[in-house]
Image 1: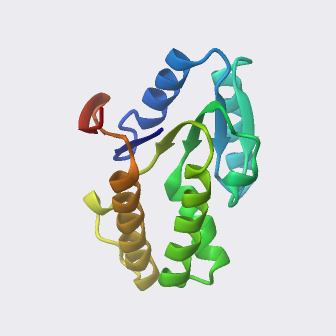
Image 2: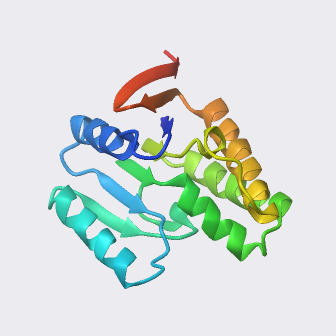
Image 3: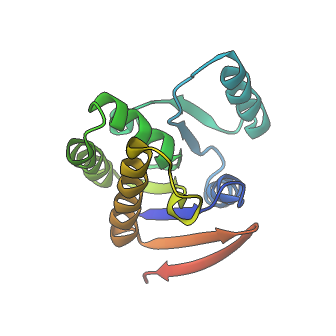
Length: 170
């Protein structure tokens, strides 16, 4: 099962995803896709781990989430935007290769048993990117979000902390 949680910055996506996972499982898995850019970010990551508490199984994986032991678990993947950034950088900012690489990784994840709650950002609803690479990334994020929404069983749009279900399959 795939649940996509989308919305803007600070809309409550991660909190909602974590609450959903905890409602389904006593020891869910949290996969952080962020690259540690600096000491400040490392401290932020540590603070988030501590806030989640000991009931979570935590992994950090910048690219190949499907290689983690996730079968049969309830998993929060947070977030697609940072995950996609890592692929975009790895693929030398080539949109087509990045899209192909992340779709392949998502497809591999789909083959696993479990519930996958995936958090993403609606960056196209914000300010228009000033740089060419920023505009490429915004397009790429939109296409990946569309792909995930199409294959997801449930899609939830978070607006100011309120979940709005926009797709729910039986």
